[in-house]
Image 1 (tube, one colour):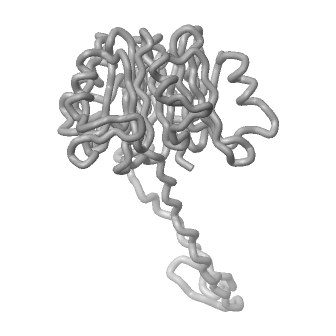
Image 2: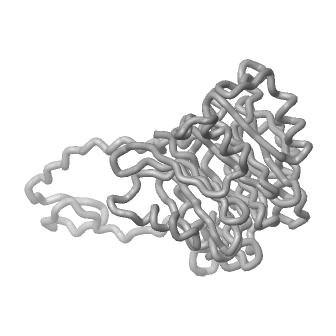
Length: 348
């Protein structure tokens, strides 16, 4: 069962984060929280989207393996796409992905079809430029499907990010916050988006984002009330791969190191008289080193050996939230620089 990595935030500190190993939420509508805490518990949440005025969509796999969805206050064109005059949703819920933006904008797609409405003009132009044909059941894209949008995120003030199956894409980031400016430079300097799984934007948080790479590394600027849950998830995000289906990158299980092969324990020989250059002549010992151990690292003038600190990979910033990044970021950066730089700072 495909489980997409998902970061979504709404008004009034509402959020939902999801990955194959962690999921967390805060301040969701009562009926959604009741669903997430019911018994027997859900097996998986496949998709979750938050919009304005209490709008939401959730698809999930119940305790018995069946897939269902719930929603409230969706834009009319999106409801029409989901049902198309039928009494139940006709889209493939196991691959359905929905992004809700401001002013009833949305982009929805599964493995065979897509629908959108009220997109930012630049994004709509980019989508239409990739389109071959579209009907209620099938959407055909150029380049044998490589031009199909596989990830779309709608942010505030017309900001958006779109990645295509083949690694192309389109984006516009309106925020001038430092981390967003650095992310924009990184995207601009990238030859394509084959290494980018998605850039999650949030209509109610114009300066916030999560940039997720296909390697599983994530870089973010998030509100403080999300840090505790995000900090648990980010180090465990799996590597992801883009399939030829027009759906978001799917998580891949981390390769586990093979179990070590047990080695036979050497049998100790019976105690015997041995003679070495260090042990007293004739001493009866088991295998042993009587010699004084020589330090492997020496320092001049009798000073202690220098301590070389490890470069931390997790920095905690009062300004930017949690950022997971290599100690040295690539040119352009993936978002916010670390708040402290060792050895003078204080890694969290």
